[in-house]
Image 1 (cartoon, one colour):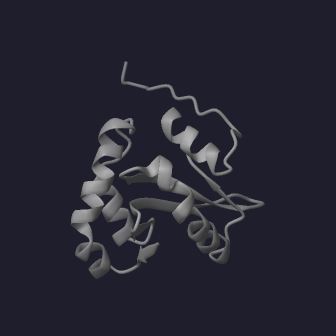
Image 2 (cartoon, one colour):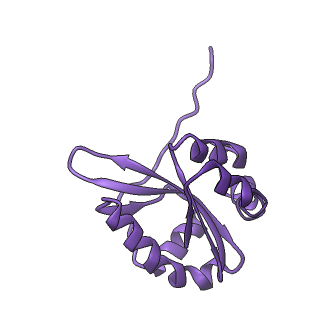
Length: 136
């Protein structure tokens, strides 16, 4: 997995990022962000984008700092055959997260993604619930 650490790296791979993350945003997301938002977060240093060519995978990640731990949150993860290929890139990703200071990796995700992540060692910790609020 290659992490795109500069705006130039991000721009160079923009097409791949859009191609692999658009289906995630459109089908699994709940309107929290767009692919352009993820690219801007990475350009601003508030998130990281990683890519892999073999298997072809793209992910956006952020660090969450809790009082007693640091977790890498998977914001979006996409690619062809991701379920079958997840274990191939995940060991590298875990090493990167550990070296970067994380003590865990987490994701608020769809049930389909949760099934994929459970196969590579993730477990349910919390349930995310949401109440949309509107002006009365």
